[in-house]
Image 1 (cartoon, rainbow, N blue to C red):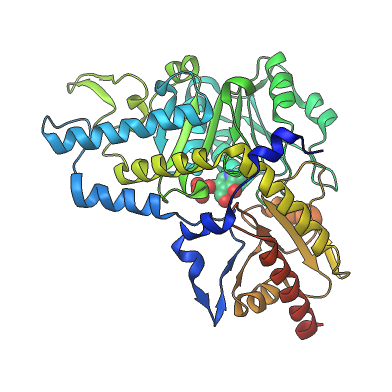
Image 2 (tube, rainbow, N blue to C red):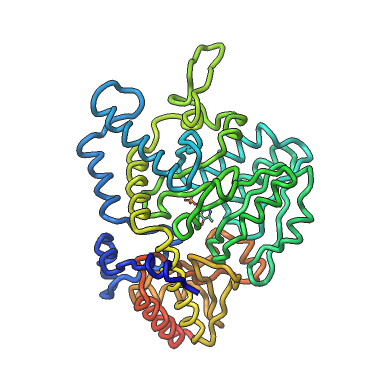
Length: 415
Ligand code: PLP
């Protein structure tokens, strides 16, 4: 049930919003573009593109080191971005916001630094069966290095985490739990608050991979009481090559630096180096200044539309897409969790996802096909891959209708 208050905040003017995204006017093979590959990367509004161009045109300079005017301007904007991220996820302090290259980089940082400090031979690390490879491989590398054990919480045939199995795996040998807030290939939204509470009751800290969450769902790190949270700028309307790691200050103080170099030091002699304070201790070398400035604009753009309004609008569109896609009788959804967001995955009987994807492409419809960097999920469902349509607030019901038409055409050609 949508309340009156929700109705008030749902009023996104999508036609007006679409004007901000120049790429949405593109024609592909003579058809206007329908972009349903938002889980891979989102398109960028003029506000983001212009802020990056403004930096390079008007105040390009390195940060934190210069006394000169341009450097101070760049530093101010760079640090403003950090405060914007802090406010966006409701962190306690900007010291808890580390700039990285992306979600993968953020997870690697924690696997490496947390691993060095806390994971020993015989310890266990928990992940789930619905991970993106980015939340598998860094932990595998750590566990191999430390002779620790990687345990996987299973999921059921709907793509939901089996909570009882998770509880069975929780014991005093577990050093950390890492899991996705939202699955990139199944769309499952995990009950993360409940999971974090259960983990904490056994003294286990939690890293949330929020790569597919922050752009769809209001995320409040204090409310979740999460220990670490990772996401990528490019999936939330910002530039590529830029990521965020949130960590509770008490944890970040306890773990060693990830990489060495300029910026992350306090003093250096050949005998001994002392490290910079948070967050700079984790930011070696010249950072992605344009990336931070673009991310700042992207988060301000999203905040201006209202993440609650985005959530309501996208949820309606998602339900509409589910209903329309259900009309194709040869179509099977992969992932049917009760709570879902962002992506819908499916297969079409007796067709290969790549062939369907190619025929959609010729009609100007961009979807992703394949394993979506979640090979273990494909193994569990015994399929080579899926067709995945993933949504943004700039998508419309008309575009969903075009997808359904396109799929029917693909069916005619392939079956
Ligand atoms: N985690 C999830 C759930 C993702 O969907 C992705 C990217 O698709 C990643 C991690 C990796 O993000 P990036 O490639 O930006 O590091």
